[in-house]
Image (tube, rainbow, N blue to C red; front, side):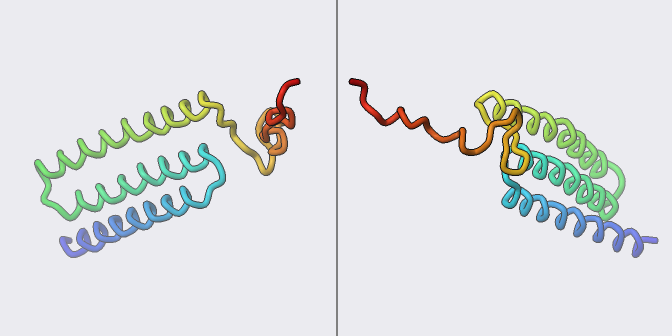
Length: 123
């Protein structure tokens, strides 16, 4: 039984680490701030959950398992709240979600450029 828990716990830790690496790749590859926040927060909570569950299976049951459970609860409370705060700050500072080459509300990339009269002097 201990040998099975060892392999299951190790597998969960490796799966959680791989999920975290995939989240890092998603942060680098996704086009806008909202999809990057989404990739980071989902893989952060999922990877941490898998790794903490694996550590709980590998370690002795008792106080260590309680501490791992408290760490898991802290991550589950703070990571989604931080992602929400980041998305709210991005939206408040003027970043709009993009779909393809267009922004939400019909503004395309060409309208984000400075107007032609911005560099001209007034007569």
